[in-house]
Length: 281
Picture 1: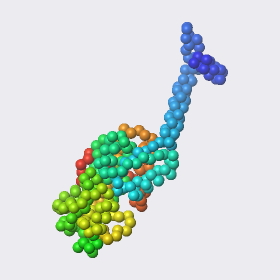
Picture 2: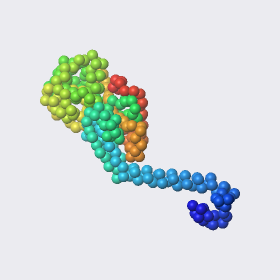
Picture 3: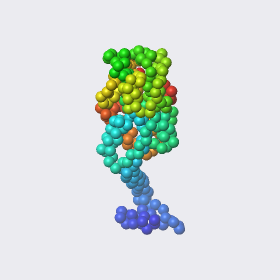
Picture 4: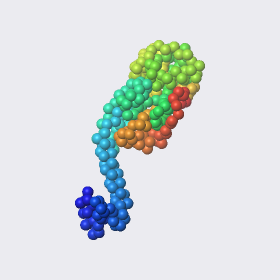
């Protein structure tokens, strides 16, 4: 170290240290140089950290847990957009019920969860609302309501309802809507994906409240819900303790605004209240 410091003096043309007893001490020139040297070292350290962070992001992996109903278009659109700026990032994905996704997040098995019903936010998580998705009443083609443009939920009170199983975000939303409308639905079938639910409705086995189909619905009719007029929030949740630079970049993309399967996600907003509220309507 002494030799290295001596070489600094040689470069400057003036010594920065001098002998003092059995050791050395800074000269006036050395004391003048010291704060600038510290700044230079701090800047160099920051540069090294930036390079390491950039490298970690470039070659990072992001684990995404998502609600099954978002797998057809929402999740692929988000991943595609992120990869345009970070092509070397790898994704691992799991899908299932809302509760399954949030459990994976809590267990550290997922970096981020894309689910519905994040307003209010589950405790201990940071969240963003990405967009509001409308819900419709789907009835079979021969149903008494099929000729209408819209309907009230209580108009279908005598029908058999087809829903997702408990634990799925949409099931919780539908249960809350029925309670608000004073409807005590007769549940005929409980499925695990929207394709099955739509197929059962189209077969004439009941009615369902669900997001609009993205493709033509055969042998089934989707009605606008006049009362209650409803949407469900779709959002992202993650642990604030997760310091992954890849996660930070993905969240930054969501905050900046993106486009999900034709739905503009602009100015995504954070929410931070405890869980337990009714769905947005």
